[in-house]
Amino acid sequence: MPEWTVGASRPVEIDLLVFDRFSNLCLANAIEPMRAANTFAGRDAYRWRFVTIDGAPVTSSSGLRMMPDAAASPRAVDYLFVLASYAPERLDTPATRRALRAAAGRAGVVAGLDTGPWLLAAAGLLDGRRATVHWDALESFAERFPRVEALRARVVSDGRRLTCAGAMSAYEMALALVRAHLGEAPALEIEGLFLARERRDADGAPPAGLVGRALALMRDNLEAPLPIELLARRLGCQRRTLDRRFHAELGAAPGRVYRHLRLSAARQMAEACASPVSEIALRCGYADPAALARAFRARYGESISALRR
Image (cartoon, rainbow, N blue to C red; front, side, top):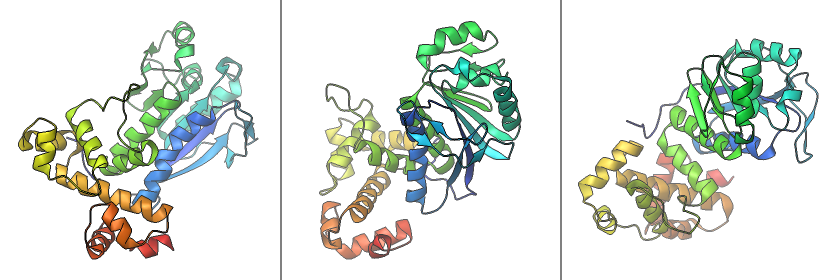
């Protein structure tokens, strides 16, 4: 069963090994959910540094120049992210293979992003494992590395190896890590921050699944929260069915999740605008500003005014 929240632990340490012509979008999708997780947690749940093979700057596929924090070197980290993009075969040098093997030996989990799995496979780090790669390179990847079981999947986890197929799947991978490390609660906050509301299909249809539809209804009714019984009726199910599904998928009751979404919205409003607490309270379903203040402090450990400072 998923956990709604996971107790505080030491920061998760990550090295991001970035190669020339990397994808800005893939890099941002991998790291921004963790940056947001730090914000919501009020602490460094994640710490990372950017490295390159030789410590020299690299340039993204769109021309953005990145100055790394250091050259790649073996150091104990929880995760080593390897991000490459166009023409990974040109990056596959003896020096790259040696650096990857050395760094992987000190990393808890090695993750290949975009065409990063190509370089991991070339270094022998995916032998006997299942993996994916950017789908444009999947066929040639499968032919070049017969010891790797190549899958047309968005994210593949196999023991201490993690691979994802590109920018959108990098976001999914990062969000899954937040869920594993911190729980479902911060993952919901991150989804609200980056997606505004639950994902909808291209034609505007509401999200599939009872929990997904319930979350969409909750986010559409923050100012005047729906009683859970009424929420269940609108979804065409019984209250106990809704309770059971929320516990199974999120590890918490619908009422607790609803309060979480309202407080998350209050925090975003407090950070984004100078509206008085009384207005924020009304927009988030609290008739009494003092009630919001108490709930906010209990949740975030500080007042709205302290957060704004």
